[in-house]
Image 1: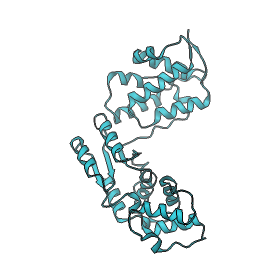
Image 2: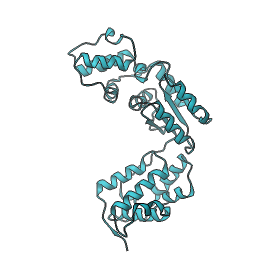
Image 3: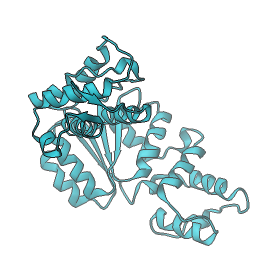
Image 4: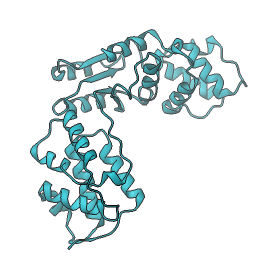
Length: 289
């Protein structure tokens, strides 16, 4: 007889969110299931080492008992099977990993939506993650509708790390987007590129350097709230746009320049497809293909 500490609604939402994320199936399910059993199964109590060595089927059964405890009972496992097929469409899975997916978690009692993913974009920075889907939408290529998932890796070396991680297990195509200084990194991933993977190296600079000056000016004017009218010469000082913006923020008493915050401001100031530069259009065309 199991003795279970009921999960709170917030805990259940966190668990579901973690299971829905785009991550390698075995790693994410093992982490969630072990955390659930360790944290909310009172009797019997298992040590971490015991959970690490436990058969995947036993761990699955214990975790689903804990998760389902206190939820309205259901015998509808349609979503479970959809999730199983979805994960199988993304990753090459071992028989043990498939055991984790063959669960009876009561998804019918919580809001769950299975979102198909058909392509993975690996980009260096947060700017691409925020702005590329918006620019793609203006080019009539909706990331959500076409199952495109983008990961901000956090630098070109991390892009290589992610690519190597997924090249062996991922079934869907990857589109790798590098800044212009990533020639060496391109050579590092070239041996692992599959027939349907694609790579785009920016012609110069970073993604911020692809933004039209008119869009940058409009964004800066919105941040300054018309206290200063940005001129072309403010942005034609040479060097990478991020350096220009860092100096502009300092000179005009704005808060510290941060890429994420600025990218969100840019997104809020995009008006039409005229704000999509030629190279961004080309990137999206390659993504679409």
